[in-house]
Image (cartoon, rainbow, N blue to C red; front, side, top):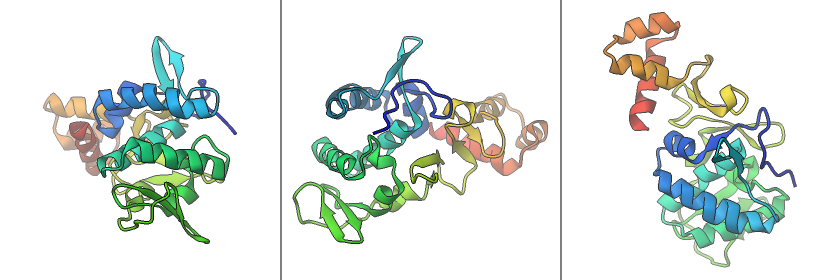
Length: 223
């Protein structure tokens, strides 16, 4: 299994605070998951941990960041951590990967009823936790905001949707959010907005559309 627990160009670098800001979730939630699960229960399955130390802070790769995203959405839907961990463990063995929640075929077929997790594939519905309930389909929430590479692993992520121009790409600016097609951090645009600069002026200065300016403002205000 390829295990990403050291800095590498193209893999992205995300600290707990950066994950919390990008996904707009409490820092404490990310910190707990990183300690208790990624470097704890899940990491122990592989005899390692998912994070590494960078300037005194722990960081993870883009694929771990995507798994955070998926797991947090399950949590928001009411699925308990125990069920999420069971599903992750079974899927990791099934697909021989440390990042099953970042794989295209998993994200395309995974289902939940708000309590349990299932995988639907060509053989039918696989029960990942031994239950038989099946109702709510959550996967479209995950799938539509992601792009995948030739290995079917998540490669790019749009935190506020693909119809918006804010992109997280581990190959650009070490995975920091940027305006798609540019290497501009949305916070730079937002700071101009907070300072009172008009949207047409900001768009002209940075050679982007007013729509892209508005997307940057929307993303930063939400974060």
